[in-house]
Length: 236
Image (cartoon, rainbow, N blue to C red; front, side):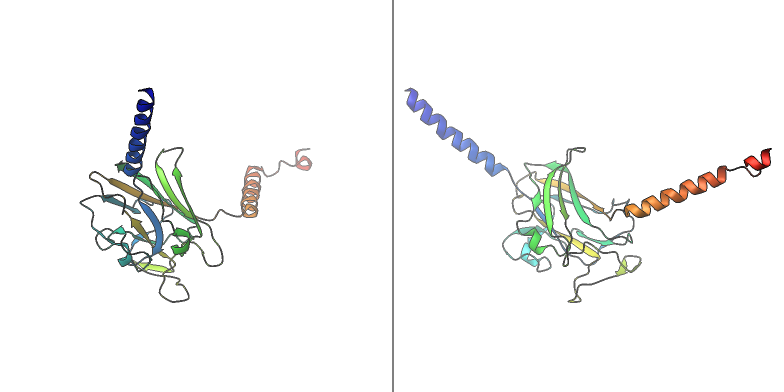
């Protein structure tokens, strides 16, 4: 009897474990070339860099239809013709990393880069996901520069939402314009939903420039503090 109960317990444990894995879905993301985008004008204001998904409401399409950037057809992505997923860098600085932080989450969602993100991504050569220790929100971030991944470059100029900027050697990829391919194949359950909020980093000022700026400020402060005629020779 005890052996039978033990075997039954193992069977039930396997069933519940399988159920838990089935309930854990995995939306995936990767930056790709963009077009017809929302312009981001300040590195300090990314409020416009956002998009949302809700199963049954947000339009989707086969991932193979999204800029021809997804090699494996048959996966489901947010349809960029109905949800804006493209953004232009008009901040006059190169974005050296791009992060999506997720809020308003409903459902058992686990967020990650696409499995081949480091191959598809034309801007960065690395990616990772995790939980922000301050906000406790999940995030996916793309980073890493090399000879063929220069980050998201700034546009040359913008007239409203029409911008011009650097392009790749093929003349088609806008290096200042990024779109997010959002694979929601595994987020097809009633109630699944999330909002993605973007942010970016820019190069830190060189240490030598910071030192020179600090020295200049100190010199100007001392000069402005000096009182004419207060030298030892004049005071005698």
